[in-house]
Length: 108
Length: 115
Image 1: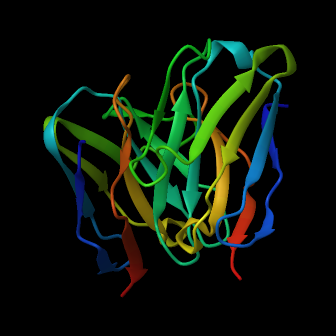
Image 2 (image 1 turned 180 degrees about the horizontal axis):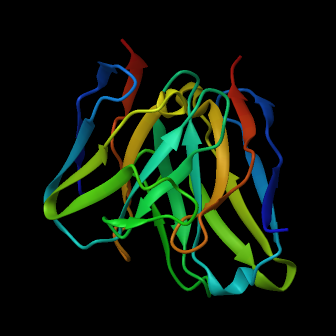
C-alpha cells in the first residue's frame, strides 16, 4: 500500500506569511492527488485537484505542485480564514487510497 | 442542488453490525466512483472504501477489509456500507463522498461502538 507522509504536523504562522506543506508518497503515484482544508466541525473542502489544478472558487493564493513522490501545497499570503487543518489525499485509480496525517495551521 | 445525504449511524456494541446509506441528488450518480471516508473524534481523515461507477470493483482499507462491504444501487442513486464485526476503533463520523470529479461530501453520520 502507498503511504503518505505529510509534514509538518503543525505550523504557527502570521497573517501575510507564506506557508508550505509537503506530502511524500512511499512510491511513485499518478497525479490523482489532492489537497483538502478542514475547519472545526465542518466537512473537508478540496483546494487542489490533479496535484496542481486549483479547484473552482478557491482563492489563487493556494497553489499545488509536484509529481512522482513529492507534492506541495503553498499558501502565498495567509489570510485569517486560512487557519485550519490541511490534508493530502492520493486517490490513484485501482489502488487503495491514502490521506496524509494532516497539518494544523495555527495563528502565531 | 448537488448533495449527498447519509443515514444509518448510531450506537452499537462491539461485534455488532450497522448499515450506512447515502443518497445522491443533483448529479448523475451512476457516472461517478463513490467512497466512504471516516474521521474518529479529534483525529484525521481515513479513507475506508470506494466503489467504481458501475459497481464492478471495490477497494478497502486494511483496517476494514473482510468486515465492511461497500455497494451501490445506481437506479436509486444510493451508496451503502455494511459494517460487521464492529470494533471500538471504528467509532467515527462516516462521510459519503465523491472525490474524483465534483468533490461532493455528505454531512456525515456518527457511528459509536461501545459496550
